[in-house]
Amino acid sequence: MKNILFLGDSLTAGYGLPAAQAYPSLIQKKLSEEGYTRYTVLNAGLSGDTSSGGLYRLDRWLSQPIDIFVLALGANDGIRGIPTRETTQNLQKIIDKVKLHYPEAKIILSGMEIPDIVPGRYAAEFRKLFRELALTNNIAFVPFLLEGVAGMQHLNLPDGLHPNAEGQKILAKHTWDVLKDMLEP
Image 1 (cartoon, rainbow, N blue to C red):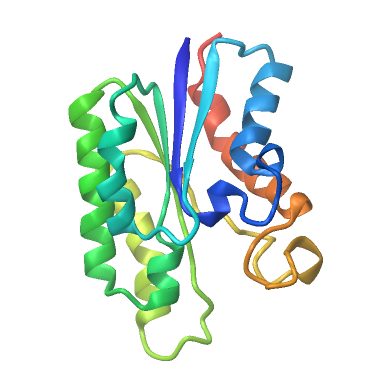
Image 2 (image 1 turned 45 degrees about the horizontal axis):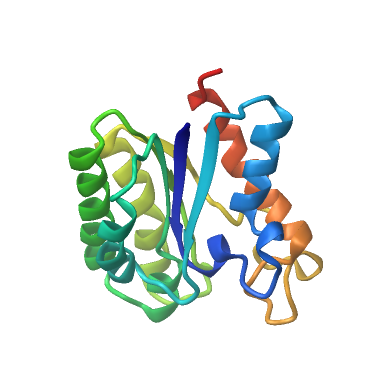
C-alpha cells in the first residue's frame, strides 16, 4: 500500500460537508475508479489551521509511510494577514521535514491566493510565495486550489468562503490533474 497525505485546513477537511464530499475523499474515489487500488488517502485537514499549526501537527502524521504529500496550507495565513515571510518559512520547514523523513516522497504544493482588493502589496506577495516555493523545491504545483471556485456563490457554502460539494469536485480536479502523473500502476 502507498499513502497520500493531504495536510491542509478547512478546504481539505471539507468544512460544513460530510467527510465523503471533501476533495481528498473524492481523490480516493477517483484512485479506485482508475484502478490505483494500492493508494490510500490520509486526510490531515483541520479547519482554521495555519502554516504554523500544520508544522506543529506534522510529526504526528510522519509516523506512517508517506509516498505522496499534498501541502494545502496557507489560506488562513492570508486571511489573518500573517507576514508572507513567516508563511514561506513555515511551508519550507514542512517540505524539509517531509523530505528528511521520506526522501523518495513526491510532493505537491497547492497554491492559495487572496483577492487583489486587499490593499498594498500583500496579495501579490502572498500569491508569489507559493510559486517561488514550488520552483525552489522543484515540486509539483497546483497554481490556485480555488481556481474557478473562489467568489462563485453557487460553488460555495452560504459563508462564501468554503466550497460546497460541487466546489469540492473542482478542487479534486485541480489536484488530480497534477497527482495523476505521479501515480504508479
